[in-house]
Length: 242
Image 1 (cartoon, rainbow, N blue to C red):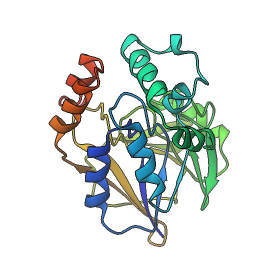
Image 2: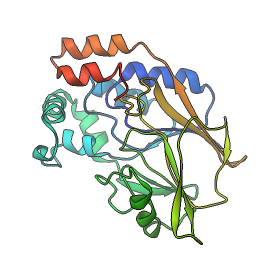
Image 3: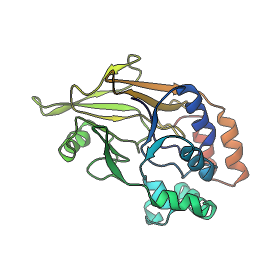
C-alpha cells in the first residue's frame, strides 16, 4: 500500500491541494490531526478530506474548535483563530471532527497527533522526550505530528538513546527495521524555516518512507486570512515557515 502521510493542515486549503497534486497516486491518506485552526478554510479542508479514502486523528486545534480544550492554554493568536473557527464550523464538519480518535494502530503503525504518551498535547521536539515515548507504543514505528517539523527519532536500545534524523534526507529510506518515531511535518503551517508544505509517502510493500516538500501560493492563503480578520502574525509567518 502507498499511503500519503499528512498532518497539521490547519485550514490551509491551498497548501492541501498542492500536496494532493504533488503526491499523485496513493491508496489512502493518513492525516495525523489538526485539520483546522489558524487558517481560513476549515470547512473546505474537512470536506476535501472526506472526498478521499482516508483515516484521520483529532489534534489539539480540532478539539479547541469543538470547545473540548480550554482556550486559555493557547497563545493569544491561536486563541483568537480558534474562536473564529468555532463560529465558522458547519454542523456536519463539527460532527465529523467529534468522531475522530486521538490515536490508533493502522497497518502495524501506531498513529498519534502529538505523542503516544499524550496523544493530544505533548510536543516531541528532542531526543530525550522521544526516548521516553518509546515505552508507550508497541509497534515498530509511531507516526506523529503537532510540532510542524519533519523529523525522525530512531531508538538505539543498546545505548539507551535516540538518534535524530532531519531532512533533507535521501529520497527514500527504509522504515520498519528499527523502532522509530516519525513526523512528516506540517502541510499548512511549517515551522522549520521552509514555507513549502511538508508531507510524506509511506510505501508498506517496499518498507520505504519519503519526505516531500511542495511550494504553494502562500499569498492566496494570506489574502483569505486577511479577509477573515485573522491575526496578522499568523498571516506573516506562513511566508517564513516559522
